[in-house]
Image 1 (tube, rainbow, N blue to C red):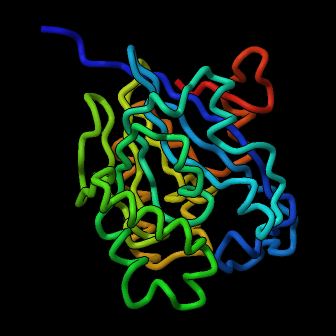
Image 2 (spheres, rainbow, N blue to C red):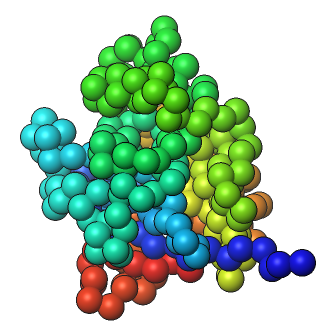
Length: 262
């Protein structure tokens, strides 16, 4: 029998937010320095195996950045060229959730199917998505576009656990949003978990500190437990942590832009 597919994982940084403080990112705790400045990095992820590249999340565009005023370096689809990825050839794009910084740059992925939890779409098109505390984290044109893509037959709606290709799975974990999904990847190191916003920072999952933006703290804790249990490699990648660039080696010639995780 053929050996199971082992994938490579790369993180591609396309921008950062230099204006945040810990109070924006962590729930209150005694002694926590909530006024301390804290950088947040923006990544998209490439899951590479022979003959194909799968992309996790597509970030946001320069157009959105005009409203959001982040330190946006380049559109994620352009940043992927640093790894030789042609967005038009990508067969699957996993969308972890529908916040603006994860689902905005979809247009260059002209052949892809977008993998999304059904509950995520239901939430943002339902009763509570428009409420101010939730709506501030989305761009309405992004939601409309995902809905259009669904009607075009290009959204793979899933419910819970789903295998994208051999050795790559998504699992609904909730917490940050109702349909938040983590991605599990078989590598030569074992199973690596790409948490995306299930854990923005390593401090969230490693020190059991929930992120400040959530729909369910209980589900966030459950997600921490599920991701830690699944990561046979011992590696759970926090989605926005500047420490990514310190914990994992840069791809030669792409220092500060691309890291190899496995």
